[in-house]
Length: 361
Image 1 (cartoon, rainbow, N blue to C red):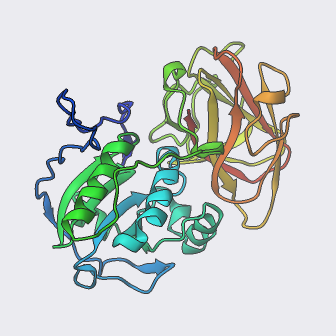
Image 2: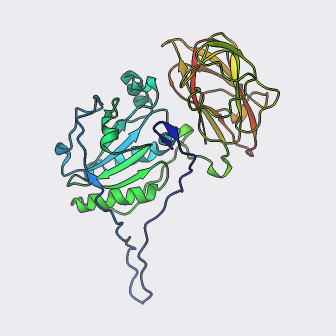
């Protein structure tokens, strides 16, 4: 889970269910099991949506115009792996409850500079099948109105325009859906039922393997990175030739070749430069893109010095070959066997790539 400006090294617990009312034992026919109502106190008022700089998938919406509807506000940024792993549920709820009065609004509050580009958001939203209304929050007006600090963040607004529930980060999907069902029932919707949504998440949207995860998100720009161990350290703001030490310890990383380290990114100046990272996780992702729009950058991935084979991610083949074509999160490793400390290496065959952050799952 990200916070704006820094990261929490906190793994949220998985779903916490609401209590269930059980039937007393007697000889009468069994009756359906009813769930006890969740306590959903009033947490605030539905803030104005007027601060959105643009809308995708919808004309501009307003708090007043949505009165009578239950509104799910999903605060996201498209490179956030934590948000990506919640998306299958948000997408499913939007479809499942749209005819019962639920309106889902994705508030896109960007983390990286390239996420301010609405064309990038539009393209990624299409690729990720985010077809509900999206409020572009480039000035963080809606973020501040919600007093929000997290990606992702979920808020539920009742039919009277009051915020009644929130959840930050991943998990608690059952509890969140029960809150949706309860607010829709309060609003007079019929046919809600008590069934909970099951999703079949694939690729980067699949849940993390929390039990084996020993590597946390790490930015590579000098302002927020950790465990950078290229000999001589970082030469910030200028081209410099880097090398990797003979051995990396867990969660250490290094650059190889001619790079420029900036505030929130590292940029490759000449071909055949690379990054090495010692990690312990099922999945490894890298947020990166080409500095020149439309100019592809070829790369090759190795794990412990060998092509990844069946451990390749969705953005590389079994020989580790891939191409950077746009600014987004790339899944480079997905292991299927026992998880252990591994040495990840990526070599870029062309110059011009910019890398921003590693994430794991």
